[in-house]
Length: 421
Image (cartoon, rainbow, N blue to C red; front, side):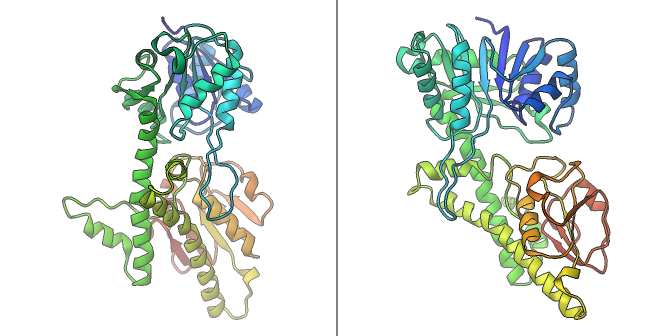
């Protein structure tokens, strides 16, 4: 069975590029999102996120009639679920539990329009067992259809998991070139998923089962988290010992079998800062190293804030005629990584907010990739700027390409990325 109409549920940083790639191959694509602004923007041939080259692809797809956005799911041959998987609120220090309510809502949304022969793929990064849960939710909502957990190869509706594994800022290229892990709940589910993705994917589509596919994505990002935790812990140790951590890492990396990553103010984004918790929450007794890495990386923002407090104290000691309210601070960057506008789980955003909460003086934020401050910062004494301003303390949080040209001399500088040292 061919896929003439494809529906993508969730038109964010993954869903919209995925929808656009199918549409660019002359497939009819129906994008679904609860955000009316996003839907209206896309239907105008524009995009509501920052991602290189995506605007041109979306514009062409909309103008040519291959892509439209709606708020309510419509009938299709394949449904890709690309909605967020956040965590439930929990006490500080507790292991967060995954919140699958967005996925459940997506399942409830598409269930009424499912028909025999359809394919449902969960792309949302999820804890192990989530794909099976999707099949159960759909089976409960549509008892007139059969699903692979009962009917196996003969199911009316096929269900699979295919995690996204792209880098923000390079999504368009990596969606096409990267290998995909396909985890079907049966062989038929996997084979049909491969057929669908081969519409535009040039990389290999590697088949496994649903649980292994779920764990593969979590493993990839947990590995990165552990490696970053080593670099971040090393930076704290070197600060204590008065050693330049970037010089140290550069020297250590001259060893042919050593490749230490670069430290920073923490770990952010919708993957590396989140995915390890899916493993820890499922196997808390076994995931000791992964849990420790999460603790190290989650503690780094507080370490940076302590450095700011010390810088304020140093400034006031040199300028006894001034008070804390007179001290101006410029924070460089809010995104979770360089050269994008994505603020999800951003340590830079969290650090800036906490500085604003504790500091009575003026704060400037330079973030070249956004036009206005996020809602979480709007109530504080913060001014968004495009250029460096005269400040008493300069705090580099994100190494955007624009920041390399800035030259700072006499002011106090806290460089968490090592580009001005």
